[in-house]
Length: 547
Image (tube, rainbow, N blue to C red; front, top):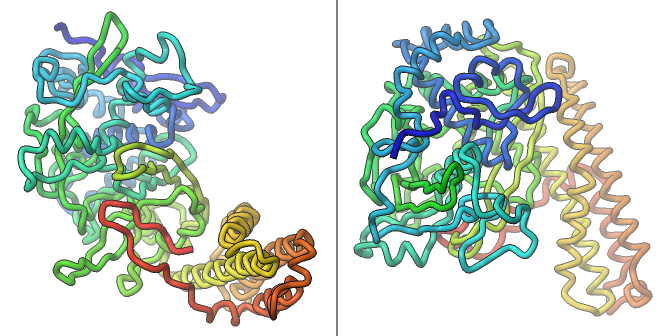
């Protein structure tokens, strides 16, 4: 095999220009044109996140010549103020390692290992539709209405295959039955989903691709010390070890280029047609604080009674604003820890490295897996914008106030659900649980855009006095109560004659009066406890957020 398709020079990264055109660029071109590109624009937001992490690994590898906190901040500040990357420095580094950036190579194919096609103890070969996240087809389960057909379905251009290779490496499902056959003994570590599939992925979004890269370019750990020296995958020998249990990387470049799967792409002519893989690197999730792009949850381990933070995946049914506390709050007692990228922005604004009164967007992307995490069932994303000065110590009182308002909002929504449930029960139809869940979903849907607009409208520098803060929070209370009460009235107006008459002491009019009483004032709702769900999440399955 001759080396083919060098990522430094061949266009493969999908981007969006400010003219609204989608354009593929090479690795070198991207860093040169980053200020003039709007964003990444791959097939899926999750794929863009996988590509973003590779680009960040390059930056951590190029800009690594600082010894302490001050030098790291000075490096970041100089880049931010320049508004562009020093192309000569980036190019010099990448060209020095260009032989490790061939997508196809007899010894060192990029993000792959050679020789899998000559082994029998591997997963595959799979057709390329399995690699393509838009299709996610296996050989025995074909989509009824695929997004591609013909040759576009059975093969990929090298540029597309490279993007999906990054995606597969980060988000691959467990392949449970195949894994069971591959394990030499029960004591072998379980493969699990790819590392990115275990995270509640979040990234900051700037006004252009340069700013997006910089805002996620975290140069210090949570102790405000520089990371250990960068060790990206292309600076290390090809690792052939399977099911490789490693220690948590202490540097960003190594973690960002983690090989959860060891893959080999196979092509026919100039098209990639199939792939094979084996298990790759894995490490315990507990306290994995080198990871900067995830939300966290605080779990008590049943086995040893200890409490540790673990990555907290998002749920596709929960809007990002409802998880606001997980994004911004730092409180171990209540099980909250900020994502690293959010902490980094807080650090920068408090040192006036970035403008204090700035609005930035935070974007999430994630994968929802089915039973035993053996199949991808949903791919989702969301975004939320707010003034980042909310994170500063100067305006620290804002965060608990907003979180309190969200508690009240959740309780408002719960009352709408209870109203819908009671009306169904009054009609004698069933337990009303489907109606309750539908009403709550409708309430959150109607609150979605208004809350986002309200949050984005908060200007801490203007609204920070006590009276103005109260007025701003009162504004949301009145708005949310009006929205939920309007929904409640619609539910009652649509009820059946049987519900109006009712059963025993339960009727639609009585249920509506109770609903109006309980939604009369904020304090009544704030003091209500959210009911806890019975039972716990089974091991290996995502833990759902409480409604």
